[in-house]
Amino acid sequence: MPLPVLETRYSFFTGKGGVGKTSLSCACGLGLADSGRKVLIVSTDPASNLSEVLGTELGSDPTAITGAPGLYALDIDPEAAARDYRERMVAPYRGILPEAAITSMEEQFSGACSVEIAAFDAFAKLLGVPGATSAFDHVIFDTAPPPAIPAPADAAFGVERVHRLFHWRWLVPRATRRTGATEGTLCGNGGASG
Ligand SMILES: Nc1ncnc2c1ncn2[C@@H]1O[C@H](COP(=O)(O)OP(=O)(O)OP(=O)(O)O)[C@@H](O)[C@H]1O
Ligand SMILES: [Mg+2]
Image 1 (cartoon, protein in one colour):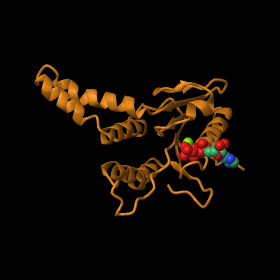
Image 2 (tube, rainbow, N blue to C red):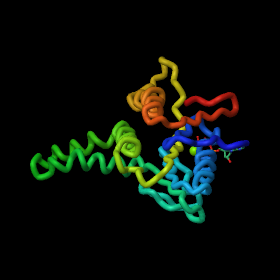
Image 3 (tube, rainbow, N blue to C red):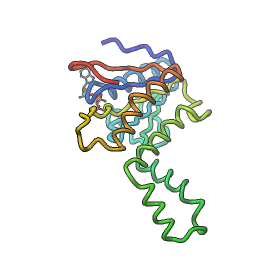
């Protein structure tokens, strides 16, 4: 199978579970690094297996991949991003508000929705903050599979799912258009979403 030629600085590999997003992100990243480019692969998947696939333990900062000069990768860690986000929100009030109010604020910023927002905040920084990825010629996003669209009567249709749908159906497509990114929508076993 010929690899897609990634000519833009940002690329997104999207699609339903198991279609080959991670495999192709890594294959394309390796191909670009082999041709002398400096490449960063970013996993936005909370259940990332990028460390296993690349054979190098990853964190939330770019890590050089063993045996692949020019190739770097990171995992966005939603829990760590949520802890940083919570601390940024609460820290200015420590020593000013009563301890009970601080505890209450920490609880407010500890829900599933806060974790989603914090992870998106980390993702948006890599796209939007000048200098965040300026050391790299290419940034490849290996994304999480999108949620199945639930039937309206589904009682579990909650804020978190609305947020995830907003993220994948509205924000990511617009981010790819605004940055001129290539979006690798992968098809397999009946076609992928993305
Ligand atoms: N082009 C391909 N041909 C055959 N098998 C493939 C191909 N690409 C990936 N696979 C296999 O399919 C499985 C899933 O691949 P991969 O983990 O890359 O998918 P994914 O879309 O990232 O999955 P997830 O949605 O769970 O993150 C793996 O076992 C991988 O080896
Ligand atoms: Mg994957």
